[in-house]
Length: 84
Image 1: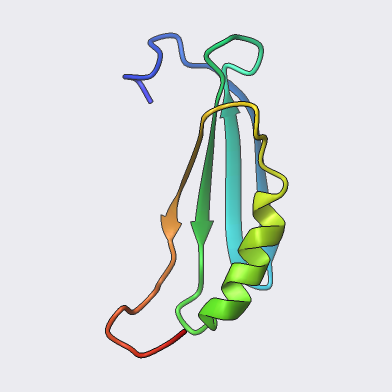
Image 2: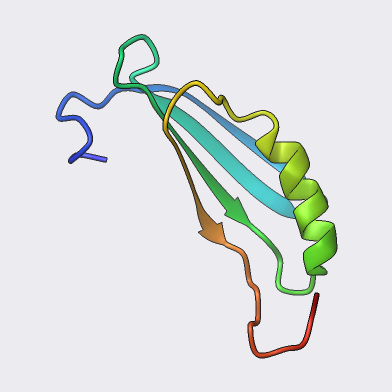
């Protein structure tokens, strides 16, 4: 974030939990041309991936589309299992 802008200012932050999926969303430099949005997501290990994706779609609809967005998180997906 420091590489993005030396004068980084947190504009707002929200936190949501939806069916055990934790979601934290923050906007930086909201009133400037350098606005950026960062979202962090946590999926519980035991949650089915299809169910998680349906929740994630709902959450992502709330993210602004008019600025650069970074989505990070712990999705707890085991690539060694045969799941859809």
